[in-house]
Amino acid sequence: MRVLIIQPESEIAATADAIRRAGHEPAAFPLIALQRVDDAELNLKAAQAFIVTEPAGALALADKVGVRTFPVYCDGQATAAAARAAGFKNVVAADGDATAIAKRIQTDLKPVLGALIYAASATAPINLSAMLNTMGFSVRQVALYAVRRAEALPDALAKMLTDGNIDALACLGPDEARAFTALVQKAGLEKSIGRLSAVVAAPTVAAPLTALKFARTVTASHATREDVVAAVVSLPARIAKEAEDAKARAEAEARAKAEAAAKAARESEEKARAEADEKAAREAEEKARAEAKAKAARDAEDKARAEAKAQAKAEANERTRIEAEEKARAKAEAKAARDAEDKARAEAKAQAKAEAEERARLEAEAQAKAKAEERAAREAEDKARAVAEAKARADADERARTEAAAKTAREAEDKARAEAAAKAAREAEDKARTEAAAKAAREAEDKARAEAAAKAAREAEDKARPDAAAKAAREPEDNSRADAPAPPAREA
Image (tube, rainbow, N blue to C red; front, side, top):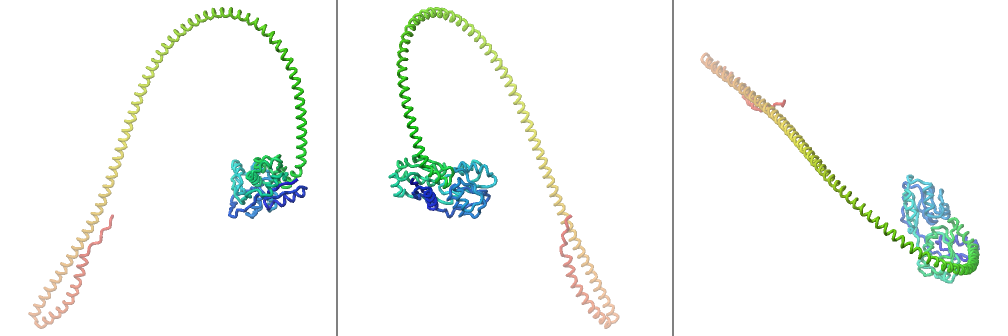
């Protein structure tokens, strides 16, 4: 059996060898290539686990991070094997699809313990992240690699499909399935797929292939290369069994058709007999029905006359009853109208009373409010007046202190001037006395002894000159002290 495999170059050789060892012929045509995203950034802060859904994702994650102790949650055994081969220690394998891995994470982890790092391809769908978000987890989906598809099916592969030289497709990843479906549709070879069997690793791989009408789609027991190859090995037996089952179904259908034909013949004969019996029965029934109809007509006529009489009597009774009811209704309506009028008057009176009470209450509240506002205004006015009076008193006290200080300064200044004037007067008087005594002494001495007096006068005069000069020198200094302004009085 020739088996088509379309994995990337890095994985296709191992799968081809496994198929060859199983006794089948691999047809290897890589339809996708993996390209690392060099500028992808992984933020491991406050993270608790990794998620990978393809072997390529496990390899890209291993190249990007050095840590190997974080738990790694994988979609299946193939991805888990790749993660273990890359050196990750704590690897958990789910059962092959997004729902399974989400449920496993929900069972094992808690959202409060940190974010989940989803190492995905650039074209990976976001349904897994969305599913985990609804469970309360924070998911950082990072594109670590991109899947690049071939532009078209290789000519050799297209010819093999057209000529019917491919028996089965072994597909291990959803990216491969999407690429194969798109390229077959682009080449217009959908009709060539009808005789092929598809062997897939998981339901997520089978989903993109549903657009192509394969003869059958077989899902491996686990999402590993070994289980996919095992499913390929079991395919001929499965096909043979399907053929046997189809043959058995055809034989059963033929027997069922023969039995149905015999049954139909019996039913037709029985139907003819039944129709003849039914016709005879109908004729007898019609005769009996005609007789019964005539009798029923007579009975109906008699009954109609009796009913007409009873109807006339009932109508008369009904008219009497209706007239009585109308009279009673009119009386009740009149009473209800009077009651309603009395009630309306009472309600209007109560409403008027309530409105009057409300107006009185509002007026009282307005008066109370006005009095309160007036009282508040008076209190504010009294407070303002008290503040103004306090300020005026403070200003008056300040002026009084200022005037007292000025008065003290003036008094000190006047006292200093008076003392200076008295001192100057005393000095002038002393000078005058000294000069008069000297003059008298000179005159007496001149008269008594002219020469002695002259000598004494000269000596006295010589003596008086230095004293006068010193005194004259002191007088301007004393005068300047007297004229100096008094120091300002210190405020109390």
